[in-house]
Image (cartoon, rainbow, N blue to C red; front, side, top):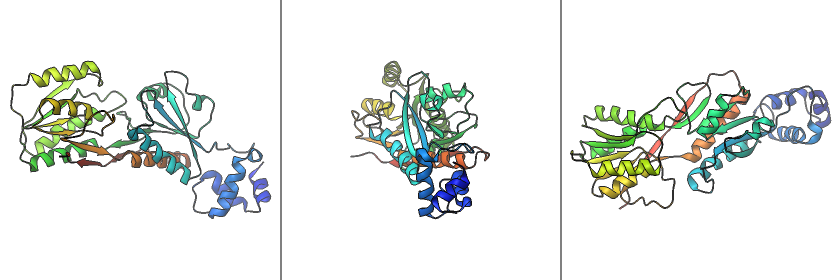
Length: 314
């Protein structure tokens, strides 16, 4: 069915069909006409030979360790789904397990949001034409759109808060920075901590462990914390897990976690948290992907989303 045939069948102008095909979220066509055109395009009768028929699906790639029933991950998906639905798209979720990415090999989606560093490593090695947005997952080279927390800004909020409460010698607990991998969060938080400390005239110290969070890294951090013999008056941890560990050893020190709580079996009592609005980040990622579909030649961008400092519960 051609554009002309679709227009004739629905009793609308061919230009309206053309606008909707180029941009399903267009404001140049009334909502009623748009829904009629999209309804036909989604039906078997709408299959066309003269243009690439949209799938009306967005992909969301996560890794097998992410529990989408947990609020931290569920909120990001909810944001994606809401933004997609507002523009007449569905969302297909696939868990990456170091195998073929079916949603891409079967051309089931028009673009994909990637929340898995392992999946991103695979996609980088493939000749992939579909638009991609990285969500809370990044790389140093800006060759696709990215949505990330404002790690630097978060560290400035943390140290401003500590400075206002009389802390002058904060300790940073985290991972050794590495900008070469698919997530810059830890590196950006550590660098932001050091930059903010210089601005506020603070004397800093740090404990940094190489590699990702693991039982081994947690044990190594614990041993180094217990062996500390130099003075510090507050702790900023790169993530919530390290913050909980630090607080258990130094319960009388102010402790700030560099990101949200991801696991419900850890108590927040006594810990301040730099919270990411993961629902908003999901919405923005879907919005960016849809804009990329409509404007494939525009420059790539990275959006840093504000982090809110939530004070420790009493």
